Length: 487
Image (cartoon, rainbow, N blue to C red; front, side, top):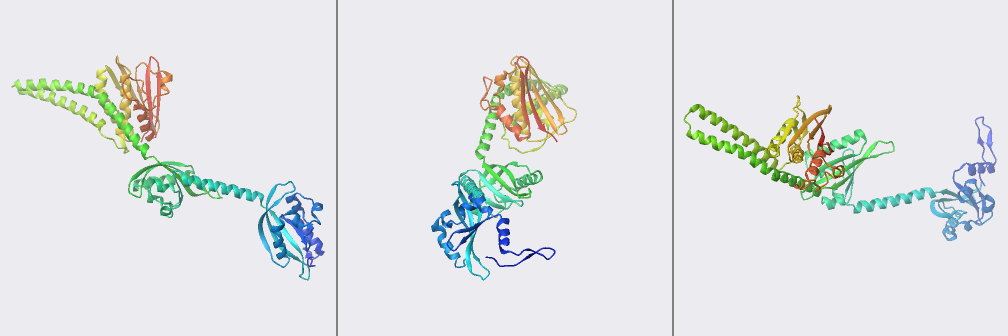
């Protein structure tokens, strides 16, 4: 059935000269199942791998019709054409194992010729594709599920290259930004990022991801197709190639505009609440210098002594300066505050905070003690925002001591670029059960107040990459500690 030709070894001697030996070599060395079918469609030979794939022994197969083991209608025409010389490669079909399980099989059919070229049989080669097809089906399901998620999620999903060129954008971009995926693919991520500053921030995050291989979080601003600004919180992760190298990035972005606006509203509400509660103390503090001003103005009118007039004028100027400081500090707290980070002096922020709360402290007979550290500590911060935080802490400390007492404010470096600020009062302390709920929006332990102070303060501290902790002992007082990065 095969041409008679020798296979020579290294010494030139024939290893195989018998055609049947050569056929056996082929059948037993291939990883595929092989069957030879005669012109009557009967099995005349199968190899070991055929029995492994289908579960039949050679004795169970030889002499039986080929069509007994598969759908006759499916293979009848193929076998007919192969007998005429046609070749079929990789026909994907399903066959049954002896135990009844279904197998995915790739079959190739070719004519088997004798030494004279006459077709005397059909050669069928079977490759078990069951595992591959199962993986393919699972992959298809995963892809369909992924498509379903990306088609219906409100989160914006982007896949982009290391040079920030978009190769995929989810349909949700249309809902959030007004851009269709077609309008974005091929463009850079910077197309929808709001400003050069935000684009630079985005690039730095991508660079950090390249350096560390760790997913990164980013808050940025994007432009809609109509020019409106949308605040977005994004998680950016790497996609690795077969070598474990970063090849692409995937970003999942969420519209947090409502959350940002709500945060701003809460801060404003908290700030206005503080202003309202401090107003009485400020009025009292201003009334004292005004009384002095009125008295010394009358003395100035009646005095003809130049030296006394100069003394009176000096006192009047001092009282006016005092009023100016009080009003300026109060107005700075009332002024709307944009979150802009700059280099700020911790001592200046703390002193400004004390100036705001000084009238309140006098009303409650509270002494404020600031630990003046030798070398000022500089922060990269939003001074108005930190001042609002410290005002909250100091105001809470003062209100915790209705019969008077002391508040101690201290700051110390705990690392080369980290500082801990503490506000310690001598109040009644807070019960451990109540302590767990501090910072929950609208939860308060006081008769007055709206329960937003610590919520807003904690949010501001987090934006400064800081930490807040509260310790309290019943009968001894409460300490609020803040850790911040310093320059």
